[in-house]
Image 1 (cartoon, rainbow, N blue to C red):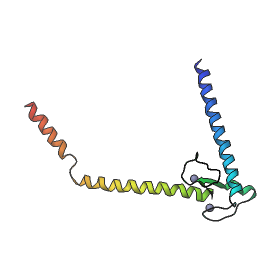
Image 2: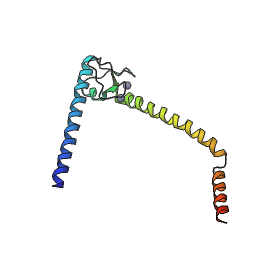
Image 3: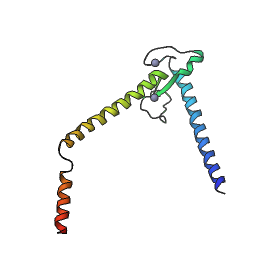
Image 4: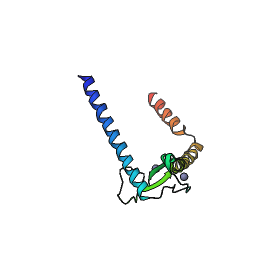
Length: 127
Ligand SMILES: [Zn+2]
Ligand SMILES: [Zn+2]
C-alpha cells in the first residue's frame, strides 16, 4: 500500500519534470527562431552541434514567465549564462559582507557584558 503511494508520487514528479523539460525545449526552440543564434554577451555565433551551448536566459529569472514575443528571453552561451548568474551570487555575497562588517562593529563591545550582569543578578537573587 505504502509503496504504491510512493510510486504514484514518483510518477507525478517524473511527469512534472517531463512537462517542464518539454516546455523548456519548446521555449528554447521558439527563442532560437526569434533571435539570431548568437550569444547576447560575447557575441559568438552558434550553429550545428554547438547550438547546444546556446541557452535561454530569463531576464527576470522567472522560468515561468515566457511571453510569446520573447521579451523575457535572452540567448546566452553556457559560459556567459553561468557568468550572468554568478554575478548575482557575487552581489549577494557583497551584501552579506556589509552585514558582516556591522557585526564586527558590535563585537568591538564586549558581547558578554550583558551576560555577566545577568549572572550577577541571578547570583544575588540566590543569596
Ligand atoms: Zn557568450
Ligand atoms: Zn539564466
